[in-house]
Length: 495
Image (cartoon, rainbow, N blue to C red; front, top):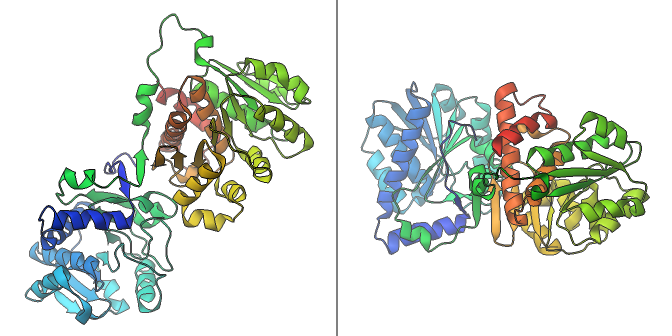
């Protein structure tokens, strides 16, 4: 999320829960449904005016449901404000009911142009308002609705989505067939969990939230499905250090990995652990790699380890193990993996260590697993598409099967802990480059070494890592950003 984007709520809900919030506001707190629809339209129109102040011609594409009713309000407000508003209803007008129908009847008394849908309407619009489908979508979009959405996406005009981009699953962030690719989305009542992960951010664009004046008591009665996390949540976990501190106070991370050709992975993980504040960092790697790691970063104690016997003394000195960066799946890798798993030390597990564990699953309570979608698929014995189809469910499934905490990396990284699901909305596409996961492994391990719980280290580590990437991208751009570009920012952000 860019620095000038609106601050979003921490509590995130599934679509069914938002309907529950709506129902409670109307039935228990006696807020008329028509009033909520009016407020939704007002919120959407306010964002439209803010983002596109020079727009003169507004095309509202409305469906026959309540989402369409929100669009009718936007059209009426636009016309009242002196803009030229056109409404195209896609669907059967005779099926419009309730508050949406009341707003349609009100709209017919104005000078708003009501017309049948035709692609040519897009040519005359400065901004398109998507009020086609709401959160109740229960099947893939097809037929005429899919044709309309495809035409809107292809026209090149800015789109404001009302509540959720039509065709996007509000729970998972995945499109169901055709889906609107909006430049901005105004979502109401409850922040939808799917808007912040998977494909959700790409379809939503800039996200604004409006609670429509619903009382806090309504939210108190419905526990959120997911919590949005940010770096500020973890600041209190890293207090100011005493003047008399020494390196032994802040833990000793041992990074195990770096098979032939992958020395860089352990080096990056180790440096990240140091930059985040671990007092001591060691590396256990192939003997040929140790000298080059020590030369490149002398603060890292790099050890050549030919087998588990050579690993023994290093394990005795460690307080946290980071297992997997560049590990590979050779006999050497399996030997070191076995030795590490025999220890009663907290672990951060990544890369090929995850792939090896997937072949012979075990359960622990003291580890953080950090799979990308492909690794998560192997852990769950499914495919990447299934993981991405519902990232929240996949992260929770990994945690339930393997224990501890699961960090499912990707757009909208998910952290599944014993106390629930969390999502980080920081980060950017520049992170799609080699080594970013190795850095995250080191960050989480370094926080564990400083005394954070596995849940807090995972949550705070994910957020610091993502924000470091955002700071690096702001300085030099996303394209061409390297994992090592995060190091300076990691240090700044934990201070």
